[in-house]
Length: 301
Image 1 (tube, rainbow, N blue to C red):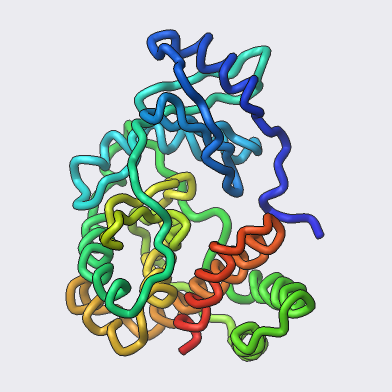
Image 2 (image 1 turned 180 degrees about the horizontal axis):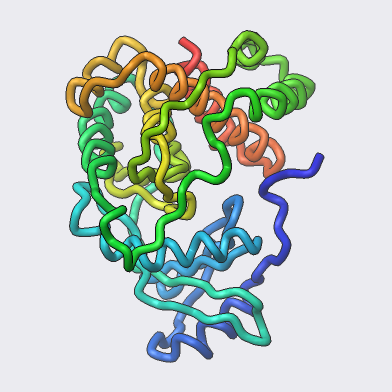
């Protein structure tokens, strides 16, 4: 099965040391360790203080260029911390793509979230998205932000892949939640996406959020998919993270949302979580799989 996260190039630790040492000489490297990998980047922590992201695919380099231009502008406008690039590596004979370095933001992926901990996230998430979706970035001609070229809310286009992934996951684990998901996927009908463009994170899910020991939201990371698109793309987090009976509290803060946008947000939540489950299964990430299956059950409730 050809996966979206299959890399074209992987930067190993030795190459990362070489590239950072050559292009960021102001850092005296005392330690380096791989923090992990995502769909698009391999990530290293240097001296416990800086995070460097190296693209694994050509697409990822293009996304990092948007981050480099946009995130310094966004940081002071948002109520939650975001990573801001401070080191800018250029393509070279050793590595054909550019890369970025950021100050390390402490925290962990939300995990083992009881209902009370999920409730804790409602206000900061709603305030964050309300703020983000009202930033008039289109007025800044010096900051190139792409539109949604991937049709992220196109149900007709994405439904076959969603069903394919669910059948694959069901072969591995006949979970009742996955049966619920494939029943939803088979019945969901295409919806015409309203033409509305706001600044969206583009990939807001539990793997791109950081919380402290008290399960309080501290940062939103991985802005590679940031673009101008329909707000439902981000509002999917309301379905995947917040219990049905508490979503009203989220929208009381964020603002009123029409029924079509809610249906699109639900579909995006289910689609993203199913991809995360497939990714976690492929990578053997038990923690991510368990959290994603819980979130999928919440989204389908």
